[in-house]
Image (cartoon, rainbow, N blue to C red; front, side):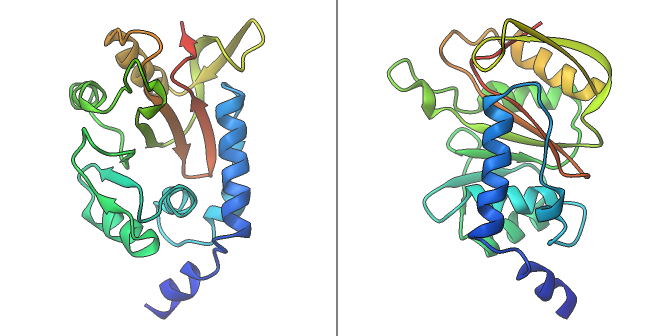
Length: 197
């Protein structure tokens, strides 16, 4: 217990939070580029360390979060940030702490906030933990932040989640921001306006 308490307080909410935010912002501004928050995530113990680093950076008592079937992670995020848990369709940030089956993933992506035509930026951000980001599946990105077209190789789960989201045919400019994170602290951002082939 003392070790857990000590590890939580190693994360500096100002300096480490700023570093995590800069890496996350860079990942979202440069879709397809993998960024890393390992140094900051290692200040937490356990398998959800990257989620805790991201949560401590993004959440506060004004935000609403939804954590899928992980009461322990939800409790830790609330204790660290005072962020309130909300229903899926009301949450600002959705944390998916395991690789889900594709039917469940489709239901989640279908029922979260996609923004409105007046305020498309009011969409949710989905943060997904996966075993790895890089892999053998090829994927091509176009749109804001991409110079022409960018082809990258990703883990099959990453590509499948994006295909499921594309299959929902959400009308432009509505959508969802996706952030993939792995246990090594790697981040891959796919903003709502980026098209993936």
